[in-house]
Image 1 (cartoon, rainbow, N blue to C red):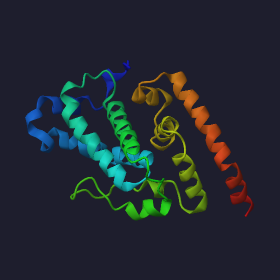
Image 2: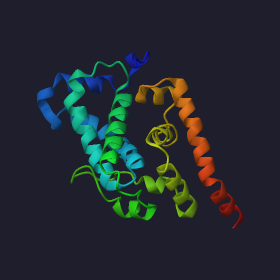
Image 3: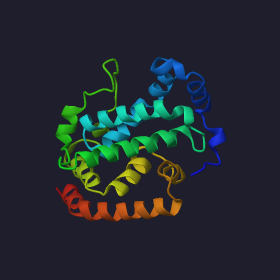
Length: 204
């Protein structure tokens, strides 16, 4: 999907620098790209896969693919949308490979949250904290985890990564109408999942 505003991509200079120095490898301009996106990519992978170990693997795969493909990036979409798309696909692919693994509890996510993208990285986000503490946060997290991949992804991008509807459509390569339809279905599913729990939370 082409983006009419891609010429205004704030990361254009970063893209051009990476494309101009492919021989520099990871320690060249690509290091700047990695530093700019590592937290957002890890956070996206975390929220889709449901645990830090898988998020780490998906994030590493994302950056490996971005590094390998940046030379052929034609700027038909914003760099951010392109990277998010790779992260989403890497996360979903990994989830499918470990489909027998149950959705991880919030407590396990907290215990796993020390993982970084490489030994020198510090300060990676702990998305479980961003969702809040306590029973209600656990219920919301678990409910999102039970959504289908398609519905979970639009929820993650729209509400947790704060993308606009147009940006979600660009990232996923789907129409704006499809984005709205999937969000509507996600809302309905989450409402059904959480209705009783929310009642208990506010009446206890």
